[in-house]
Length: 313
Image 1 (spheres, rainbow, N blue to C red):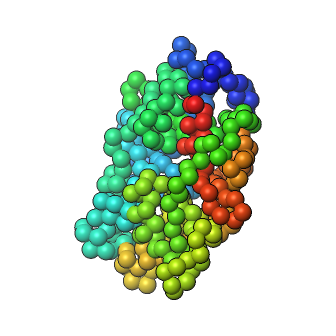
Image 2 (image 1 turned 180 degrees about the vertical axis):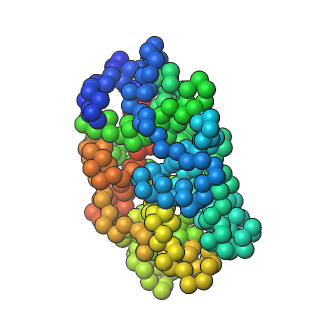
Image 3 (image 1 turned 30 degrees about the horizontal axis):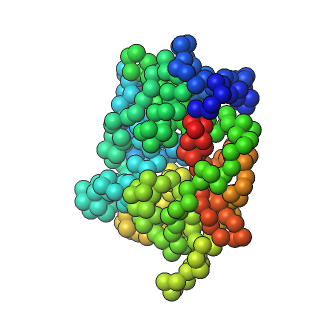
């Protein structure tokens, strides 16, 4: 944490001022002061399609899966799990092998088939500091909060910290925390290919560079769009995928190029921008990352996870 003992977090979020302590909290409910307490969940019998629809409707990147009777946490399905199912990783076998490319059948499999079962959690007595530390060490974007009976009591995410740190990180610059090595793709990339890139590299967004051409030599480093895990999730959860279907083939869906779903009006940042201002932009635009551009060329990318690292430094 910062060298000074506390940071006054003045971004209220209707909660009033908060104090970010560097020592372990001695008070029950410290992390609960910034957590979302009314958590939307789904049963493990919900279909993959239903889970995607819930996530899109509520603008979630993750959905806890609970037992309807005991209300205990059983797992979590994330946008990355769904990308894995769409061709990014081993969960694609449900579509490719079990259902022989029958997309409608595969997407109606129960969500338990793709959910993450080993969920990183914290409990209601944990501190804010402990939550930040665990999110960074485990490389996760959110932590479900469980009570003594392992029932879900809340959830805290990177976005919660971004909202709180807007206007507080006034000295830190983007260039000191951004990722300089950026994995990009080109406009002709198919949804399946974009899913593979994201899953294999644990990315939630990929800048799209160059121009869609028939030659393999796109104009380097010129951003023409950005595609996110949420864009792909919306393609599935808003039923846009089914509008593309002539047959029932998953390959037909996954052959859709990212130009049809990517955001072409890209919000960017400069390396000299203050992190607190970037937090404001993320809150206002509802985005989790911005490409860093100088003189029209891609220099890096700054994300919510980078903001979290800045909070802990």
